Length: 506
Image 1 (spheres, helix red, strand yellow):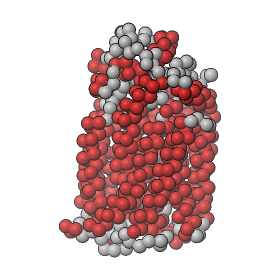
Image 2 (image 1 turned 135 degrees about the horizontal axis):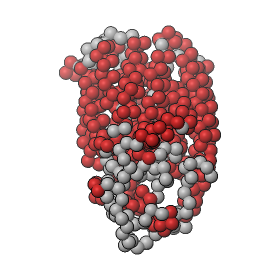
Image 3 (image 1 turned 60 degrees about the vertical axis):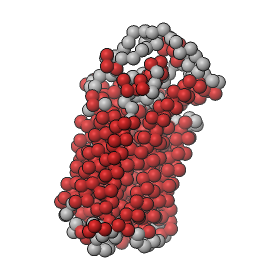
Image 4 (image 1 turned 90 degrees about the horizontal axis):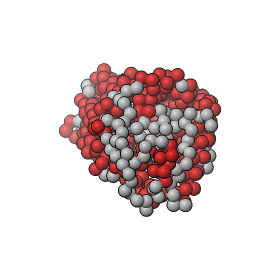
């Protein structure tokens, strides 16, 4: 074990974020400091970080996804009966599609300004505000009396939820290196897709509360899930860390460990002492062609994926394999396949067998195949297999995508703005996709909308190639450093030589 008593250097950053430093900032001093740690120490420190983040961020995304997808779930609760949501709110299926679109319109409008407040307010306080407010709005869904009230509730849900994912992703860039981002993304998206299992089981159980205290089952779904989300907000306030050198981090990290966590990051990573806002990082992001390549790939992938996830309960119910309320259980296999796929993706990426864009393009190719099948198949079993695997490949796609994207972000403002700007445009797919699935296409199993989604998936495939071309040098460097770090770990050392050249000039 390396000696933890290192000479003190000057304290850097603002006074409220100050902590001891153990090197003078030069490259030689940084490498010497990193080399003073053993592989065992590195593992112990990162295990501390993992314990603070992985389960918690996964649970945040689990709650978020249950609360966001329940609009699709409640649509088929008591379907065809007087207490079904469409009957009670006097809505047609086509009008109901706006429930999803309005949510995303609000999300798009407010995401960028919301995420720029992340550094100033602090991640813990901002995420707590998001969760408490969206839980309150979700519970209010139970009181709506007509479609106008429902649309209004969805608008405010989108407004309150913005900033959750890009805020977490930007914060994680301050704790994990780009080549390690597959691990937190695996937890986040793995538990996100557990929501398909948990949400279906909740809807199945709550369906038996239909009529209790004069409330329909769909109202109980919104009320109970909203209250549970608000209670979870208190857990987030108590447990979520801020940044490595934030004062609260001293409760579970030594000053030397705090210094190590920031020193080991690549040059472009956001740091604790970064200012709350830096205009030049916003301008640089807007001028960067990579921003638009990633944005295009995300938009087209979301276009197809959101269309599938929005229609999944309707499609599985229409197959006729199970009656009410067991139709909710048909959504579990696609969710389980997604969880297994995400876990595999995290394991595979950690070993750096291939560049992250190559793995993403392979998963995008798989998604394209199953969307084409959805557009042409007539056999119900084949359709069910296709929605299961299509959902799985859609889930896998985002694990390499966000790990890859993190290598191109720079600074606290650049990370917050870049992720929010890209993500809000990427969510346009959530506005448009539900409108494709008009009731006039129901008779042929929505094959026409699925064919359009297949075309969008093909567009995402091409955009991913473009993004890889723009980032090819950085990505090969990331894979090279990942392998060197793994080799050093096997030898019981911490790799402290040259790092990824984030400029892409090597």
